[in-house]
Length: 437
Ligand SMILES: NC(=O)N[C@@H](CC(=O)O)C(=O)O
Ligand SMILES: [Zn+2]
Ligand SMILES: [Zn+2]
Image (cartoon, rainbow, N blue to C red; front, side):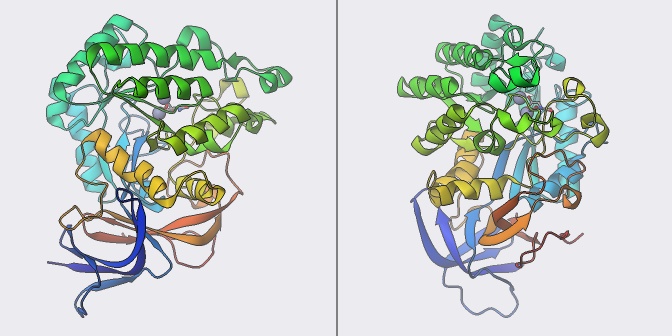
């Protein structure tokens, strides 16, 4: 069996909440040993001095666009973008064409993910047929085919009774329901956060209340059904408060926040920047502060990118006509490492939100560096800096508001099931680095 030694790095343990120096030895697709590695001249050795060694990062919210929108992204390019971003695994949302609402599409996504041979790809099945919110999708057959969660992401299930039934069914299947919390009546016609900046720009707003009303209903239904509810892309202070209260009452609710929502405010839209058009919209400084508080105190369990690739032609239109969404896989680690330097998160907390917590929510074996665990590992160089150049992305799309930003703390390599992928040379550069084909 192949042997790989990650040598001389600083292991970040999200469970024990500590850092320690150790080599990590991988045999085949499992972690064989953590501690000083004996000399082994047949093993592949990765020099990890100066690097942080984390469990393989998991992004539980991405849009890979295949089947149906391969001009924006494919499962292969998305899985390559994931690796370049430091992720060993991603969960693909079902808003493809056709929607992932059957065992056949679930099977297709799994197969394409395996064929790509990069980051692991896990399918999320739709809650309702075609995500149209009219009738339940066949959750049981999708679960059996390998769906790890259910969601109509992109839309909220407006019919409360249908959502109740979907949650009862998902609870029976032991799968979480991921909710895109947005009351479409309250946000109708809006293209950015409702507030001063929208007024100045003359753009139609989406009020924080559109998100909070939806979060409140779904928490009430989670309490009623006992279903594990996971709130996608939380963006408002009020939503954080509702989730904190629900957790205190023992409701089975977890939540995620994206790097763009904890980094930017609605002012990023100024100049009618369509790359800052996203749903939910970028909010106010007070909301950003509340998201950071939620991350720090554990209300927000997960950092997920909501990687939403769109083609250049689609974004190079009038603001009102542009689609919502931005890519996130290749900027997430750099933006999240800034939270550690800011004192918002410790490194073990960062690791928990990018590995252990998503793994626990999804029932994965990963998310831990333990002898015997699957060999999914991410190496981050906390000193490495790079300027964001969308032309260098492995993703097919470059719709990011972070172009030109200088990021510090970047992934240099990822191990997926025992296979090593170098994703960046360890010198500062903005040039493209390709992982081996
Ligand atoms: N986040 C977005 O603005 N867009 C997502 C849909 C979604 O996550 O709601 C997309 O699929 O493009
Ligand atoms: Zn969404
Ligand atoms: Zn999404």
